[in-house]
Length: 197
Image 1 (cartoon, rainbow, N blue to C red):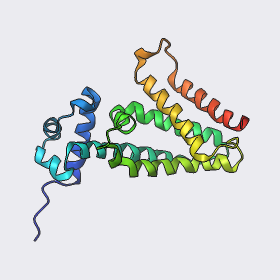
Image 2: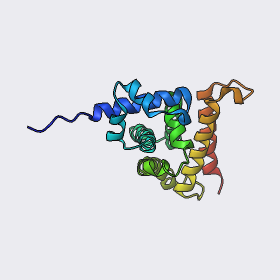
Image 3: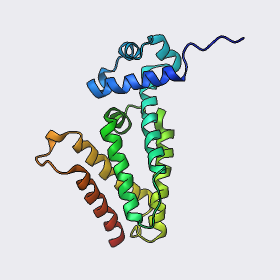
């Protein structure tokens, strides 16, 4: 009979959960593998066995972020109101950023060349899901001559900017209804696609 694996997928999930919680509390620069292991109820050996390094652990968090986004956007229904479908995709991004600020930070603000390439495949898969939504707009003639990647990039820039500002409430002098603001801003963007070349 084979020896039972000491560190399994459950341990990996616990370590990722602990790392996400620590980053949310103290920021990615304060991440300590010893603290992650302690909070997950295991040892640093488990971190090295399952991930190999701190950079790889951060890369796995980035993968977790894009897996979440790709799955949630992919599961949104497609309706005959294509513009509304894009607004709903934006609200998925908002929910992700609010509920997982640490993952948002790692996935969208982590330019470290030792970390970002580790989650690039997951980012590409999530982007492909988003492109499918924008392809429907293109097929309906609603992108004003833009390419799907260009329109998706403008959408991404708007969503990332809105999320960053909402997560730093002290940075804005107004206290908006955030969901209403997201809906309005994204709807204006999509309407602008159709009305300009």
